Image (cartoon, rainbow, N blue to C red; front, side):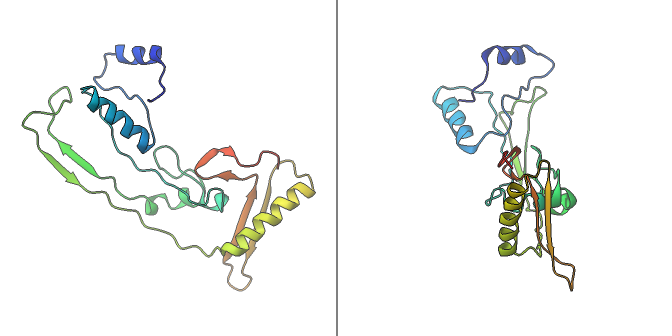
Length: 185
């Protein structure tokens, strides 16, 4: 289910410095559910699935150079995500459980739950229509003038200095920041 290499798993399991062994990091919910169902159906114990949060950007590469992105730990790496990381980051929820010295849950276990809190949001001066127009215009300009490295465009309100649109090219999808959207640009 997790598409893991058997030899690498056996090597991880043979490391006796800890009773814990991380099998996969950041799996999608449906994959975690399949693992949970498989363990329950086959009476497998000792597998713990920790729930985590993941930032999702519904418009993909739209406004990518301004918003920036986060790393696997949801810490801001670039753009507004980096600049306002403390403000945007909420608090994780916690379930406190009694465990023995090996980390296994005790029979007479109790749990205390602290619920997560959301981080704050930002309100931008970006105008979506102008942003789309600038993205299209910059894409055209890059292709028309055979720009080899990078192009940047900014539209500002002259009276207030408010940024109405900001684009850089090449662009990337915020949900997969390690992949350039259009490598031909």
